Length: 150
View 1 (cartoon, rainbow, N blue to C red):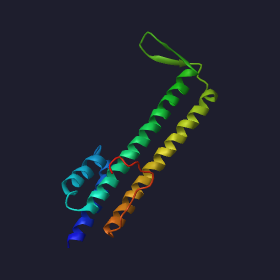
View 2: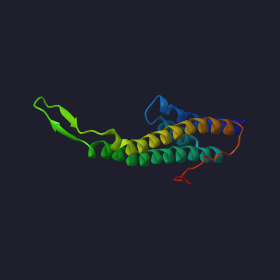
View 3: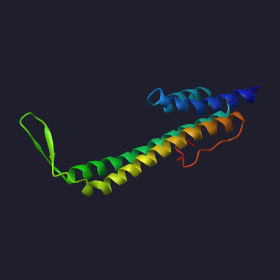
View 4: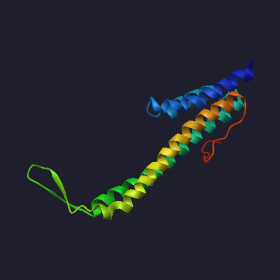
């Protein structure tokens, strides 16, 4: 009975990271709460809780790096090839905008968006897969995870 409870708790830790789709930062808050309250009861729950938190932190860092690269490239690409003026009614008007000059940067930004969407889709399916594995009492490790908590 005790082993079933621990695998259910570990499964719940994995599944609560899906709350990010309903509550901002729910992928951090709820797994941390469940893990912190039950990590002392089982080594398995402690291990799986660390896996979830490490995976969510890793994805956050990967997304942040992607945004820190893509957003400046997008802004530089859009604003470097055109000029804008301020009119009397406080409106900005873009002049000399040439799509051919910005297409390379926009392709880079489109690739970054595709990478981000692929990452989020993989995250969703990996969370479901991890929950299934932990419900079967299997030790699961997320791929491409930086081990912040050991």
